[in-house]
Length: 246
Image (tube, rainbow, N blue to C red; front, side, top):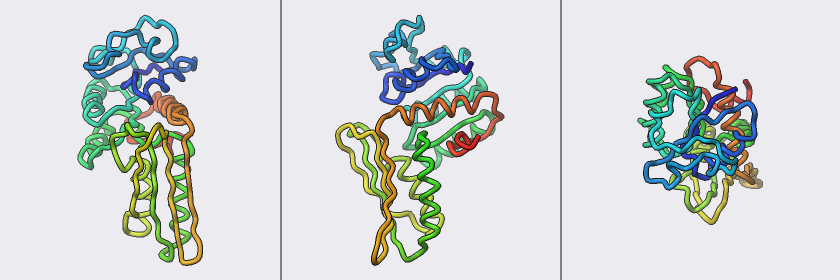
């Protein structure tokens, strides 16, 4: 059984990860974290994820409960993630990081930490989105210089970073072949879970690749797959491509 702590348990992603994990006999939720200002702190974890009483309360200090877990699953904001990363390294705990919006220097800190602990770090945990990364690169290679590319991404109006991490990753797939990052257009409306479209257009035709997430469960399931993958792994920086192929 994989023992997990979920950071950001009362958030959109954290709550779904918790709900799915509570229904999976392969996982034990040993703790949960929220910001000290969150009304969730002190509440029973089961109350947050609609899973009945667990007898375990949401904490604001990862240090207090780090010893209970094998893996920390993190979908929060860069400052909190990096703080928890330090604690994970000190205590030799693995991490699944789905947080986005990191600077280049902050990504460097994650890379450095992965030399000491195993980390799955991906801007998108869904199987479909990760397949789209691969397909986008293949299409860009096949079409060559005669086709221009642009990316359109849409998310709910509470998402703080733009462009999304997924859109940036799609842009990287194209830029390493074309030598330049394509324009990315971001939309923040309503409760859109996550849509990404890559448009390749030539003089007489166009190709559009689209991934639409109908539910956050696509990401939550991927995060749990990543946690299961990390169990017993050596230190290293892994991606969802490793998880899917592993």
